[in-house]
Image 1 (cartoon, rainbow, N blue to C red):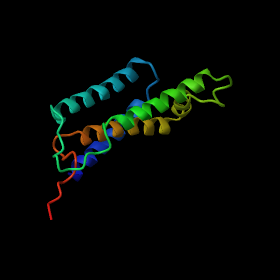
Image 2 (image 1 turned 90 degrees about the vertical axis):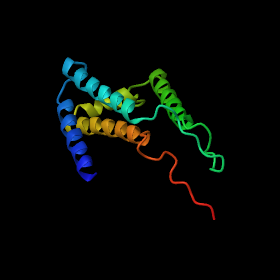
Image 3 (image 1 turned 30 degrees about the vertical axis):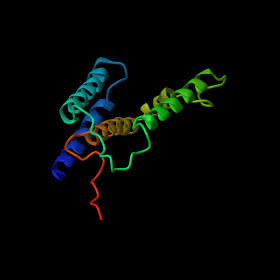
Image 4 (image 1 turned 45 degrees about the horizontal axis):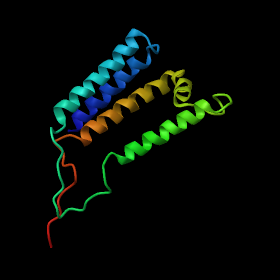
Amino acid sequence: MRTCSAVLLAGGVGYSLIAASTRPFTLPADALTGAAIAFMAVAVCVRWPLRTRYLRSGAPAGSGHPYLPWLGLVLVFVVWELFNYLVHGTRADHPTFSSITDAIDRFYLLKTLMFLGWLAAALVIVRRGSRSRPRFGKASSPG
């Protein structure tokens, strides 16, 4: 298993280095980003279960719908973006996400790390939803 992780890390670093060397909104940049998205979409189709699993009736019922934290995060992000976009002033005073990433994209190493972080986040999402791992942890034995 460690070999697989090392290969994924080396491949991700290499891919990120290549992707970071492209100029934004060009064919090579779009192709490399699109290929990563397509690879993750295939990984989701192959690794994720076709149906969700239900908790047993004796198991604790979590805190509600599992997507509520993500919805909250997206809502905070959208409100922040709209506020910073609509408020009067400079981007330095009220930066949007794109202006922050534009400032980071000017540096090759930081752009590489951002791309690698994006790949790693996608891999975590795919692995957490994978059918090969238990979704709700181990069931505790009675008594």
